[in-house]
Image (cartoon, rainbow, N blue to C red; front, side):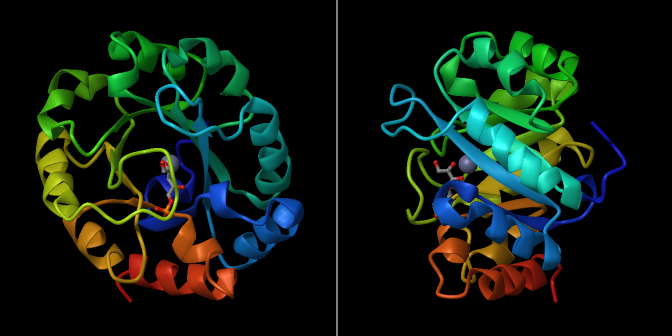
Length: 227
Ligand code: DX5
Ligand code: ZN
C-alpha cells in the first residue's frame, strides 16, 4: 500500500461500482479514471450481516485489473459476519478494507490482521452505532466508514444526523484517520459531509443512476473540492 497516494490526502468521491453497468464495467472504470477518480469502492455483502448478496474476491480482482493500471486505489467495504477469513482473499486485490464493528466481537484483532496484510485498515459503523464506540480502536485505525444509510442497498435516503457524527469522529480520532461517508451521497448531501471533514465520499446511485454517469461524477467531484 502506497501511503503517499493522493487518494489518502485529497477529499474526493469514490464511485461505488455496486451500481455500475456490470457488462461495461471496464469502460466505465476507464472513463472515471479519465475524469480524475483516484479510488473505487467495492461493496461485499453476504445475506447474513446485511439482507443482500453482491460480489467477492474474484470480482474485486477484475476491478483491480482495470483500475490499478490507471493509478486508482481499491477500497473494499466488507458487509459480512465474521469477516476475518476473507482478509487474505482480498489482500492482493485491495488497498483499503473496512469491516463492520457490529459484525465481529474482535475488531481490534481484525484491524491488526488487515494492516498485517498490507492494507489500510478501516472500521465501518452503522447509523445506529455511536461514534464514541471507536475511541479505544483509534491507534489501529487508518479510516472509518461512517455509514449514512443502513448497509445493504444502494439508492437509500441519507441519514440526516451524519454530518454531526462526522464532526464527532473528527474530534475523537483527529486528522490522521480518514473519515469516509457511505450512502445517499449526492448533490444535495455532499456539501454537508465535506464541510464536516469527511475525506472519502462514496456514491453509487447519484453517479451510475444518472443518464450521464461521468458528468454526474464530475459534478460531485467538483463539489467534493468545495468548488
Ligand atoms: C450500501 C453500500 C454503499 C452503496 C451506496 O450498503 O455500502 O456503498 O453502494 O449507494 P448509494 O450511493 O446509492 O447510497
Ligand atoms: Zn459501501
